[in-house]
Length: 390
Ligand SMILES: *Cc1c(COP(=O)(O)O)cnc(C)c1O
Image (tube, rainbow, N blue to C red; front, side):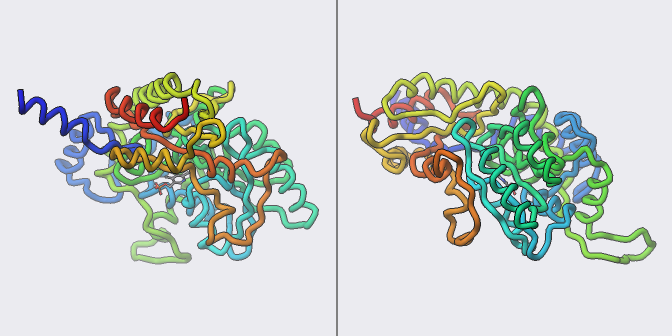
């Protein structure tokens, strides 16, 4: 009896994470196969199969497995010829990895605000930015459109604008694997797209990424660049410099097993969101990240905003209360136009004002893992309810 009680207390007191890896069990068989066949290298049958399976899933012609999503963004920038002094546009409300490798190449970002409907890139702010750039005669070479927290951006409004100005789109689908836009899988909606398999994403290889495109030639070139740009010669010969960006065959094995579980992981995260919504959505001052009718979000992270006037508390105070109960939470991404490293960068707010800044001011992400138990989720909900007025 005492032991049971101790066990129960221990379980209740365990830290609850925002999003932790969720293995299904079969991963170890794939890893074992890599060991048994001695394909313990950044190439091999699992890598090739994982690429085929991801391309088929996304509905694109070609995919390239890499050691991170950041490496995929980097290669996309290289493929687009983005270099010193070149201008590109990027969603402001994102994680820095969407653009850091491009800026490190010397390219210059202009940030585009979010729209309230999807929290993603505002088509009207993008239109103004593209118009201004065209007037100055310096169109961007690339637009990076991000699908935040598993919510697709409104690509049928973004892509035609980019097409009109001849600008290719890189879809940052790092957080949105398994989400769909008007029935199409995210990652397939721009000239290039990429997924991340970092440990906190909806499925994981511990670390990894996948670059996707219908342009098979471009992916072949990315493959060449990602493996040290070796010329076709019997010796090591280089006419240009490349990178060592490939995914390990061991990790690709984990990815193949995880990919089979994706639809159940999406369903689990959507169920987590549904329970939060049911428990908290009626409360004054609490609003959840919307899901427009054209979207099927994977609900990677449940994100909500807390209005101080109506709720009597703030996102940061709720975060402190959660932390005191050993529950991890995080404010919504701090927009790039407010980051010290990008001070002075051009920024186009949405028509109604600075949407991403206000989402950052009020927004909070709460534990959303597909392995979160109902009891753990109740702990989160009760802690939040205690902070709210009424
Ligand atoms: C995780 C993430 C990335 C980077 O992916 P890594 O695999 O961690 O390099 C890029 N963009 C967004 C929006 C992300 O959430």
